[in-house]
Length: 103
Image (cartoon, rainbow, N blue to C red; front, side, top):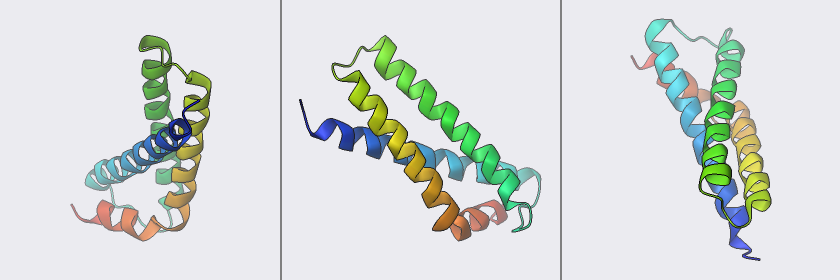
């Protein structure tokens, strides 16, 4: 078993989650102003979009490409997604709000 598979998958899930969160806040910030009062609603939208992006990525990697250690890859990628969600809620909140206001 390659011990770097869960680390690589966790990193991919984390980066994909944070990237989709930034993209959603950028797009939503173009349509309406995101304030700290409605941050939670926008973040839930970003979390759902990040879940769908990670799910599509896992569908591609596990079912279409048929990776060798698919269960370990799945666990690592979902763990990275969860880590990205918690990182977005705690440390990335000021950055997300500034990305939404930049337009």
